[in-house]
Image (tube, rainbow, N blue to C red; front, side, top):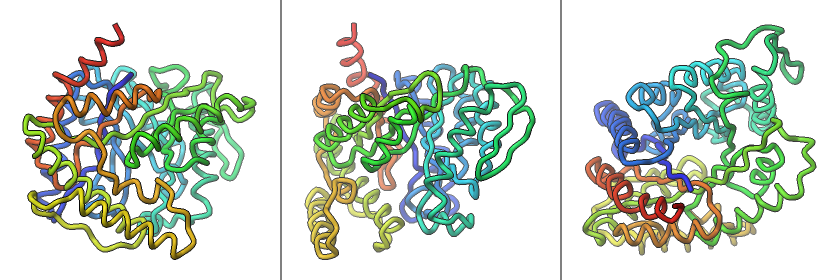
Length: 373
C-alpha cells in the first residue's frame, strides 16, 4: 500500500501575504513528506476558487517540489483537461518536461474543472467538460507512441513531434478524479487509476472499490487508453495526528468543516466559509450541516448520496497515531492501493501539518511497511 499527500493550498481569511505563505508552507510540507517516507504528493489545479484552492498552476508548484526532492513521486491530482483550460499538446509537453527533470517521477490525473466559477474564467461550456476530458486523455496517451503524432477528432493536431519524450515508457501513469460511480466505471473502462473522495468514510470507500473492481472485471478492453492498464485505487484520508489526541480531533474537524463549507460554497452556492475558534464542537457542527443538507436534498427530490453529504462526516484519522493506524487498517482491508492524506486544510496551522507528517512517517507508515515484510 502506498501513502501520499494532496495539496489544495487552502486558506481562511486570504490576503496576498497569507496566500504567499501558504504556498511556501505547502512546499515545506512536500519536502518533509519525502523525508518521512511518503511515496507521492498530489497537487490540484483549480482556478478562482478563493479560500478553497489557491493552487492554480500546479505544474510550477510540482516542478519547484521536484527540484527539492529526490525520490517522492510528483502527481497532478488533477489537470483540468477541457480544451478551454489548456491544449492537450501543451499538457503532454509540460508533463514530459517535468518527467525528464524529475527523473521519471510524474503521474497525471484528469479532471473536468466543472465549477461555474472556473468555467466562467476560461469560457468552458459545461456540456464540453466530459467529452473533452476523455478526448484529451486519448490524445495524451497517444502523443509519444510515434515520432510524428497527429489527431483528428473534435480538434485537429499535427502532424508533428511532441517533445521532449518522457522518461516513463510510453508515458506517465494516468489517473482520473472520481467522485461518482459513473466516473469510477469510466476510469476502469479506460484502464486508468481512480482518485476517490474518502470523506464519506470507509463504508463508502468500500462501495466505490466494489464499483471499480466490477467495472474492471466486466470491461471488454475496447476503450483502454494503453496496452497496460493502471488499475490503481487511491482514497482520500483526512487526517491530523498529534501527541495530544483531543487537540488533533478539534483541529482536524475544524479544518474539515472549513473544507466542507468552502466546497459547498463553490459547488453548491452556499455561504463563504470562515475560520472558527478551536474550542468549538466541530464534530457537532458537521453533523448539523449534514442533516441540513440531507433535508434539503430530500426536499428537492434528490437522493442524499454519500458524495453530497460525505464532506460532513467526521469519522476519520483524527487523534493519535493509533487512531490513524486503526482507520488505515479499515482502508487496507477494503483493498485501497493508496492512502491519500489530506492534511493541509484552510484552518490547520503549519506546525500542526508538519507534526502530523512526522507522526505518520515515524509511526503510521512503518506499521504498514512491516506488515508487507
